[in-house]
Image 1 (spheres, rainbow, N blue to C red):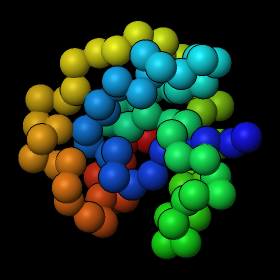
Image 2 (cartoon, rainbow, N blue to C red; image 1 turned 30 degrees about the vertical axis):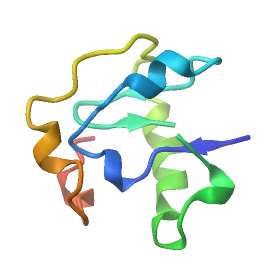
Image 3 (cartoon, helix red, strand yellow; image 1 turned 135 degrees about the vertical axis):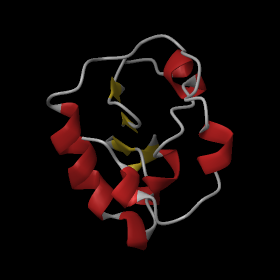
Image 4 (cartoon, rainbow, N blue to C red; image 1 turned 45 degrees about the vertical axis):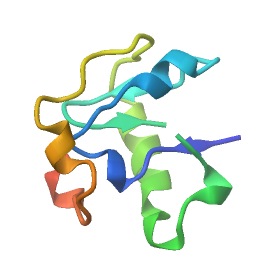
Length: 88
């Protein structure tokens, strides 16, 4: 089953999900992780994140341990329309 990280995770990098992932499928970029929601649960307005996750995961290193979130993660966690903030 494919899993997808969606826009809500941009500029946050809360990594508690990494600790419980049984297959070490997360990849880490500057301000985003790839791979969380089962693909069939991705909201229709976020479907473009399926391809985005697949593309970014090809070049980003694996992350297997929890890390400290980005310093301003709490300021960004509930914001919408953050795709322009994604650092590739």
